[in-house]
Length: 130
Image (cartoon, rainbow, N blue to C red; front, side, top):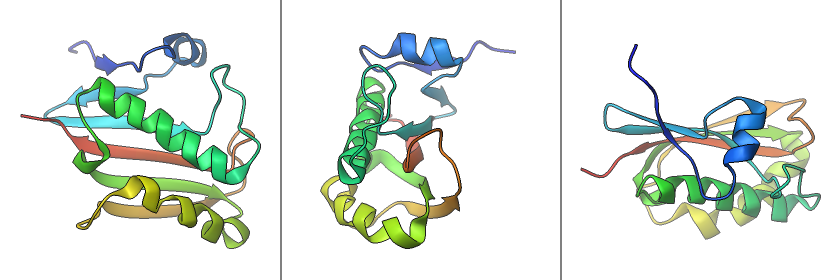
C-alpha cells in the first residue's frame, strides 16, 4: 500500500497524533478532510454554540489552506449536530459567513446524540487544485 499523503494544519499536529488520526488525506485529485469541531488549541470544546461553529470552520479552513484549497473547492459536506431540532437554526445563522456563493456544495446533515462534548462537526471532500 502506498503511504498516505497527509495534510496537517500549522500548529495542531500534536493534537492529531495524540488522537491517532489524520486531519486530511490527498488522494486521486481529492482532499478528504476528517470531521472538524470547534476545538481550542488544547482540544477542548468552545462552550458557546455559535463560536464553536465558527471555530470548527476556522479549523477546517486551516486544513484546506494547508492543501492550497479554500472552501470554494469543497464539493461535498457532511455535518453532525447534537440535538438538531433545537440547534440547527442557530448553527445555520453562522454558516453563510463561511459557505460562499452559489453553486453550493452538496450537503448531508446528520443528527447525533454525542460528539465527545461538541455540538457540531463538519467533514468535507474538496477538489485539489490542478
